[in-house]
Amino acid sequence: MSNEEKGAWVYLVVVLGTYGAYLAVILGRAGGVPLARVAYVAPMLWIIGISIVLTTVGRVVVEIAKPSGDRRSDVRDKDVHRFGGYVGGMVLAVAMAVPFGLAMAKADPFWIANAMYAAFVVWALASTLGRLVAYRRGL
Amino acid sequence: MGKPTKVLNSIRALRFAHGEMTQAELAAEVGVTRQTIIAIEQGRYSPSLEMAFEIARVFNVTLDEVFQYPAEA
Image 1 (cartoon, rainbow over the protein chains, first blue to last red):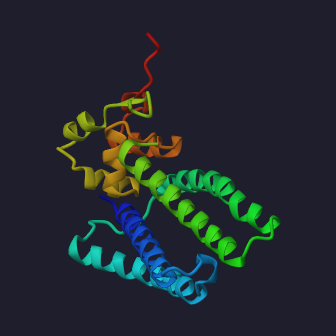
Image 2 (spheres, rainbow over the protein chains, first blue to last red):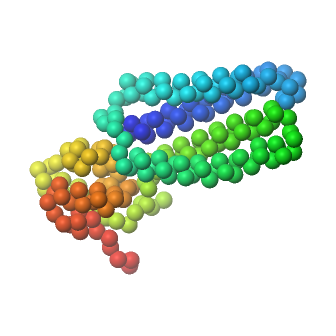
Image 3 (tube, rainbow over the protein chains, first blue to last red):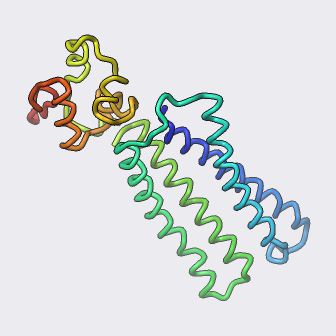
């Protein structure tokens, strides 16, 4: 497994884990209160920051646990990355229709912000899964 | 799901004919990772024309001795 493919796996796990943690925090805070009244800004910013740190730390830990023979990325990695970006871009274009619609309908900022965050999570999952499929099955 | 490319190659045979060259050695000669050589050998990645020429040059053979594109049956 190449260094870049390992990085894609780490990113996938981090995105799923941090978004799951965010949802758990928000739903835990709700406790009978309408969701739109839950204080979401600080948990969202913390989770985004933590996910950035975990992605970096995770790559280092995986590299220490299972060193790659070659840490360089090459032309195939760039092609795979481009393919993942293409898949993710298409998914993001569709997913962003939800917060766009919520904003036009003057929905509560809670729902708009969370729909945007969910759209970016879906984008991250789609682009990373696209990369992993390209690595595993080929381009 | 079938292989994403119809291009066949003889890289594995050529490596063995050239002193049992390893995938890592070929990768170093071409300037890519070993995983890329594995993917090309297994038909999971079509190299660029430039990389194809570089691979052929390593073995000192012509391009169509390394890569083949069989006609549709």
